[in-house]
Image (cartoon, rainbow, N blue to C red; front, side):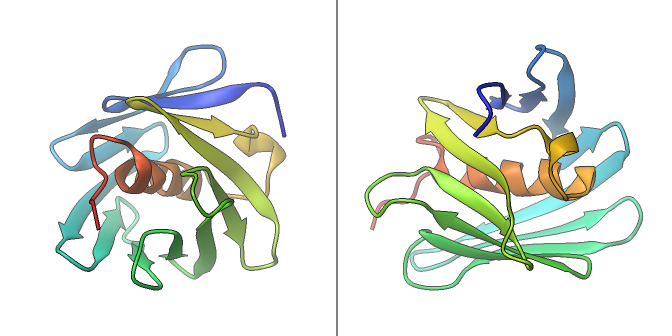
Length: 147
């Protein structure tokens, strides 16, 4: 795992050098390659996140069970799992369809640290931004649903 990390703080993603890489305003994630319109649905039993990119791709993230420990994602035609790495911790691995860990996340207070530089991993920028934001939605203490 890389010692450098990206950080979601409030509504912004910064790269390891501290430069803003993405920002969320009114349910839209803005980043260098476009925008992602998001819709988060939470109820007592389920978290579902749907999105549409400025290129028209449809993205979804949803629980695969009773809790948010295991999430399944589809970004256009690309599939990922966003699994907690330990039963009682909120650290998460983002794994592509080939089984490669493309990023790891760890909540820290009101922020989310994202490890592994995306240019070093086989993941499109739009997927990286969306999936890490989804981890922020699922795992950040301000967003967590109690069960």
